[in-house]
Image (cartoon, rainbow over all chains, first blue to last red; front, side, top):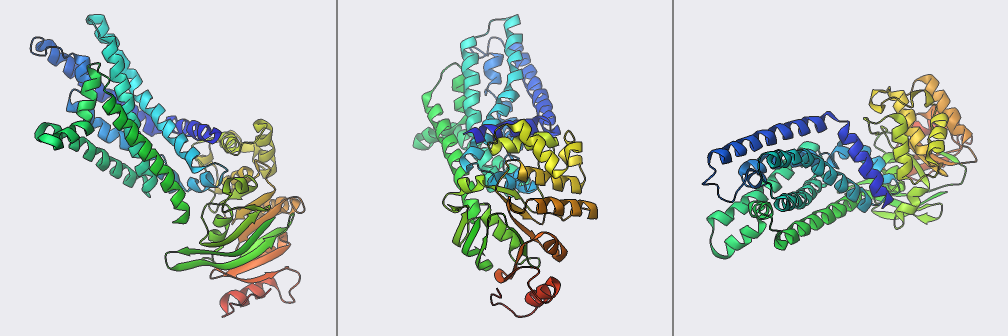
Length: 247
Length: 237
């Protein structure tokens, strides 16, 4: 697994020297800053009707404003993982080094998780701002971040798989966008369907997932789902990379 | 030592490499010659584990490269065609990264040695993407040499080099004679005559000759022209 560590280090190094990293991080923070401001403004004006909800619980998955950027940013962050190497030809050097496909995938996946965490780290400042002007439920905040990490684990795995399957970065991004868009849309079924279909949609729902964690409820059903999708997508990525030798 | 037995590779219905067999003895420098599209790169990609053969056997220093690919790859230094490199890295960073991937002990010394051997010490802190093609080519060679592998596989190693660099490169490869096993693909005949002990010629995926450059009564150029333009498909060795 030393190979995975070497791959991870290079992936992070190359990401943080690329202009893409700073374009993504800047626009990400501008977007979330605006969203946080809008939510704070809303709750300040509607203190009575908002009940137990707070700007923070609203921020962590309480509105569609949380999900829209994820559907765009995740594909942009994962598209380069393997498809970028295919496009530049460096995949040939990578796969002829004495490292297993599993090491390559684990390294790439690990790097994508670190990038995901870096994306969210600056948002801690919102919790700090709130704590200066009122009380913050730190337990719920911690579970929100845990929920975000779990969501990221599955989003990044899906993006990685698309990057393995696609011949170019653009196609990888489009495939990841479509896959995540479908998963997001299925979740909306929770609000429009009945019976078993509603149950299934609720289980797959990103909304339900984040709203539960934002309230401080760590629901293991969502964890099982996130973990299963992540394991499946990473496993398929390893398989697809191995199959490439026969293509 | 490289041993290849009845190696074939199919892309869809097209047979890119057809029952090719050859051996490269330890310390031998062998040229792999053929017109464009003859199957040179496909063959080298199978030797290095990048592509799986459709059928046939490959042994690298006695290790089965199909079933025990990672161990076989540990014995190889490979310079792929077009020399793909991470363009955003600095030269020494790239070599350190590749050395770590190949689990090279004493990495700093290994990087210095590879930089020196490939003649790229003067650009060690430059960014790979800003180098000229000739320098990038030599950084690729430094990468192939980083783990001091017993076997070198070089795919069109001199394309893009200027005449002085070509000469230096040939001298370097010659200096490996007897110490490293080298298989280099090219379509430049003078290169083969200058550095190779032996030449294997392939055409349309089949081996058509296996000879020593000095052995033929006619020049290598004439042999090549005859074998790769006429209807010869028999093994001429």
